[in-house]
Image (cartoon, rainbow, N blue to C red; front, side):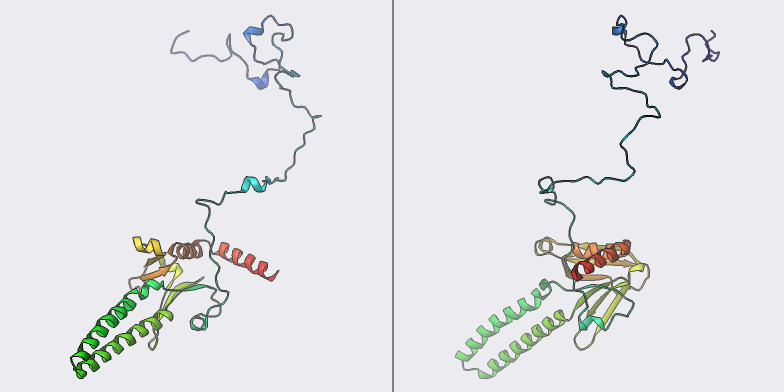
Length: 271
């Protein structure tokens, strides 16, 4: 045969496919002299190989219904240790009166958070340092019989303490709010400030944690919006940033899952 000539698959030595040959079967050379394995016959009912052709009379115990696997308590013990799925912390069912006034009727409330107590570290530290310094200064001036300067020192201390109290009240009324439509920040005692960003316009979101933030569980959220004017971009000192990040992301990408989970929780509470 010419090397360039195509090979005729129907020529001598060609073998037919298995589906067209009723006597097709594998032949072990070591069993050539065994009378139990004649040439050219398939292994129809060979218990040694367990191979048998399927016929219309065969009955199989099969079902189309999926059978879920069952596990014992011992088998499931310890599966949630060291890196299992995080469970969301429970939320209040209803917003506080401070927040409820800023929500419209068709908006679904998801939660509100005060800033971490580290937000008060600076004013409280200043108040403590002012108390020590001005207390020592007032005692020194009293010994020197300089009563006028003692009065000034006391007034300065009262001013510092009043500022610290103002910061504490401002921290208490400062809330980060999440709904199914938007994220909001409400703060201020006398002059109220309400900043919001629709979830549909959030193009990027991240949170940052310093070494101290990882130890005390707080972080800074940075939200990027499609618009140029961003009323809410950076929110500092939010507690449990990973928990809050998961809630916001789930609300953005899986709102149906949130509704289903909250609906199931409500049914469990009613039961």
